[in-house]
View 1 (cartoon, rainbow, N blue to C red):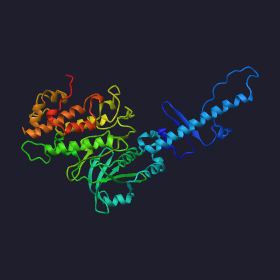
View 2 (cartoon, one colour):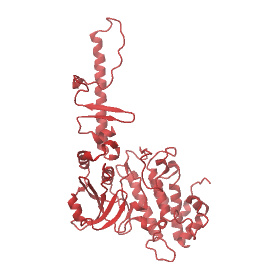
View 3 (cartoon, rainbow, N blue to C red):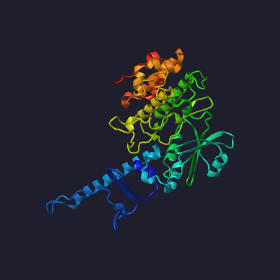
Length: 424
């Protein structure tokens, strides 16, 4: 039924062949000479032998009526389920891959009519970017340019690579972000779909991505003897803002969105260094909170180092919104430098052969003091972020806190938080 919602609403007939299900309907006979109104939708039961003369015409009528009634009921239930699904779901992720092709422009157009972001032509996109003169950055799925709207508002325009002929990430991003409205989620101002040209227009974030400010990436957040562009208090506020944005995606908006690619590169900072979650190309829309998400192991994507283990191995647990929690934990540990700076001279030069969480368990106090240059208040903030990060990266999804619980932990003092159990 979910496939029908994405591919076949306006077709006169269709055959769907899934892993364990075959479905077909047409507005004509399945076989020549078969009246359309009498087309059998289920195989009739094998005939039962009866003694001659035992079956009368009056005995056949109840059976025929019962069969027709069952068929009518099945059709009615299928129709209701189809309409409900089509109303509640808009994510292209539920469409079979064989229908995500460039030949389905008509259906993509129909899909986009249900989303109210403004549409721009390719010529308008060229004008607003001055023919793509100012490049802001480049990712795996496209290039981002700086531009401005006619009302002088600055925007960031992401031009998706033409190699993405199925349009999956484009449609998924429009479907996801158009459902959101939160101070910590980037705003989609419009899009362009013109032939093979696809663009997404966002609000402009003058301070770029969080990636260049994380300690683990060699950023300027904390440097010995140097003036910091971002102090620990600001970094902590950024971590809180990201947590609030994720809680909104998981529980606050009507679609229950799991992002699946939380990392510093996808966190943008506005003029006041307020974080905004961006890049929803891998997101999934869920019907219920904490519901299991159908993600194929072969098709698992994201960024190595931030992808939750259950995405690769179902033996670890089911894929749910807790996968975002894992990515968030890794990102927080990256922010404080617990991943990249564990073996620097200022902390533990003999720890290079150890997995970084083990180093934190063994000498957390020393790491926090070293990172903050013995500043008591900053040390408490770093300690709090490290403890919460360790809770979030627990191997089993059931051992990780929800994002609501993470926010509660962020509001507590470091003394109120305990390290999670660690198997040595």
